[in-house]
Amino acid sequence: MKIKSRLFFNLFLTCYLFFGFYISINVGMTTDEIPNHNIGILNIEAIKDILGFNNTGYENLEKFPWRYKGPAFYYLSYVYLFTVDFFFKFDEYSELVSRVLLNHALIFFTFFLSAVFSRKIVNLLIKDRFYSNIFLIFYLFYPYLIGHGFFNNQDMPFLCAWIISTYLSIKIFLKILKNENLTFVDIFLISLSTSFLISVRILGILILLQYSIALLITCKLTKKTYYEIFKNNFLKLLLFIIITFSFIIFFNPIFWVNPLLFFDSINQMRNIQYGVCTLTLGNCMDALNLSSSYIFIWLFFKLPLLTFFGFILFPFIEKKIFQDSANQIILGSILLTIISIIFLFIFFNVNQYDELRHILFLFSLILISTFSIIYFFSKKMILFISLISIFYFTIQNVNMYPYQYTWFNLFGNFVDISKNFEVDYWGVSGKNIAKKINNNNKILSIKDKCIYVSPIHVAKPFINDSFKCIKPFFSIYPKSDEKYILVKYMRNLRRENPSNCELVFTESYNLLSNKMIMGKVFICN
Image (cartoon, rainbow, N blue to C red; front, side, top):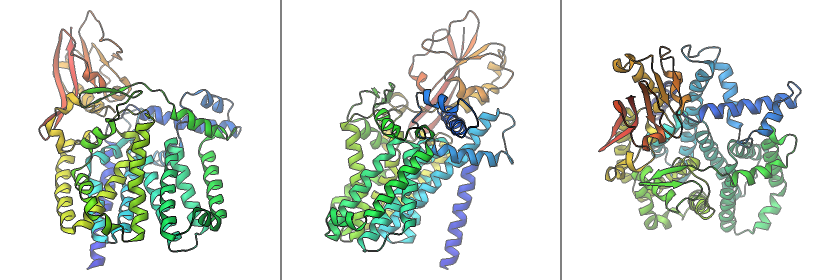
C-alpha cells in the first residue's frame, strides 16, 4: 500500500512539473528578463575574451554598470537553451524572445526544486513523511511563489540555491552534533551551493550568517567551545573557504583578472543607488529611504494565513519543539536567520523595491518554520489548515493565471489593493494586453495609427505586425495631432488618465473583493 501511495504521489509531482513547464513558457515576458539574459551573454563573451576567442568581451563587461550582477544561473540557462533549441522554438517571435520564454521552464524547475528541498528540511524537523508531503503540496500551490516561479530569473534561482544550501548545512551540523566525520563530498557540495548562491546575487553572502548561527547553537549543544570545533575541523573549514572562493571566482569572469574585485563587488552592491518608489499601503516608499515598516507591511499582506497561526502558537510549543537537540539547530537557526536578516535590512536601510522580491527566500524559510510549529502543536490543526489552504489556492491559481505573483492574502479584502499597492510591477500583463489589442475591432479600425507603450520591450513582441507604428512614451503622455493608441500598465497605471482619451478596455482579474487592474488601453485624440 505504501509503495502504491509513493508511486501515485511521484506521478502527481511529475504531472505537476510538466504542466508547470507548459504554463510557465506561455506567460508573457517581464521587464528584467531581456536585460538579465543579456548580462549572461556579456559574461560568456568575457570568458571567450579571456580564453583568447575575441578581443573586447572582458572590456565590455568591465565597463558595464551592473558588472557584479551574478551570472551563475545564466550558465545553466545557456546550456539548457542550447539543448532546447534543437527541439523547440517559438517561430512567431524573434530568437531572443523565444529563448527568454523557453527559459521560463528552467526557472519553474528551480521553484520546484526549492519546494522539494524545503520538504526535506521539514521532514528533518517533524520526521513524518505524510505531513512533509502535505507541506510540499501546500508549497507548490502557494500562488505568490508559483507566480515568481514562472519567470523570475534572478530571485527564484537565488531562493532555490539558498534552500539547498540551508539543507546541506543542516546535514553537516547534525553530523557535528552526533560527532560524525565530515566527508570531502559534504564539504564540496556545501561549497558549490554556497558559491553558486553568492554568484547568483552577492546578497547570498548572508548565508554565512545562517551558518554562524547554526554553528553557535551546535557549540552550545555539544558543550564544546568554538575553538574546539574549529581545531577539530580546521582543515575542513579551510577546504570549504578555498573551494567556495575558487568557485565564486570561476562563476564570475569579472574576477578572473583580479580576484580581489570580489570585495569591491560586496561594497558596490551594498551601496547601490537605485531610486524607485514602491506603492505600499497608499504611500510611495522610496527605495533609497525606506520606512522601517516596509518589510512588515508586505509580509503582512503576502504571507499565507497559516504562517500567522504558526507565529502565534510558537510561544506555547517552543519547549516541546526544542527538547530535541536537532530541532534547536534546524528551527533555531532558521528563525534567528529570519529575524536577523529583517533587522539588518532595516538597520542598514538596504535598498529595496518591487515589494519583497529581493528577500523572497525568507518566504520559504517562514513557511518551513511555521508549518513545523503548527504540526508540533496539533497534527489535526495543520492538516485542516493545509487542506483548506490548498483548496483555496487551487481556485485562486486558476482564476489568477498568469498573475499569481500579484497575490494578496485575505487581509487584502480590507483595502483597495490596486490603489494602495504595487501590483504588476514586472509587466506580465504586456502579453495579454497585446493579445486584446490584436483582437479588438475598435483598435483594429485605426491600426495605421501609432501605439504608445512603456516599457515597450515587454508588449511589442506580442503585438500583431499589422500595427506598423509602436513607440515608447516617457515622462509625459505623447502629444499628437492624430489619433493614437495609449497603453497604460505597470507603474504608469498610477498616473492620472490622459485628457481627450476614451477607455477601450481594461486588463484585470478578480481577487476576492478586489478588482485587480493590470493595465488600461485608450484611444486618444
